Image (cartoon, rainbow, N blue to C red):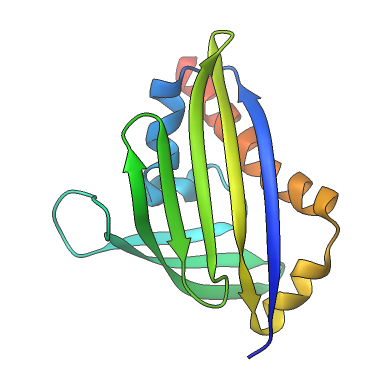
Amino acid sequence: MTTVWKRVVLDTHLPHAPERVYPYLADPGRWPAFAPAVEFRQRIGDGPAEVGSRWWAVDRIGPFRIRFADVLESVVPGERIVWHSSAPWNSRVEYVCVPERGGTRVHARYEGDIGGWLALTALLPAFVWRRILLRDFRGLTRLLDAEDR
């Protein structure tokens, strides 16, 4: 299978405190509420979420559905969380939440060997990837704003 290495780094500010932002990044079951490409996440198994916990996952890219699994790789509660997505994404996503100016600075790092036909998406310029991925944070901001009303 052909794979293409891709890394995208985002640094964005959300006008909500880390204790509001982090729980959404730490719970894949909540991602469909704010991340446009996330269609479905369901926990595999029972018990508390901990390193090694898994979720069934479906993302949507245009008319296509991509099925894979997410695994919780590393966690520092309230500060940092790392997810690993299986093929075809073959990627690692790290979110670090830092309090800043009454809100949260999120450092997000996406990297991996994208496989199959999705490898074609790796050819998109970095600025296009950043625009696509920033939609998640705009969606999360809208969701948190709505909770405040």
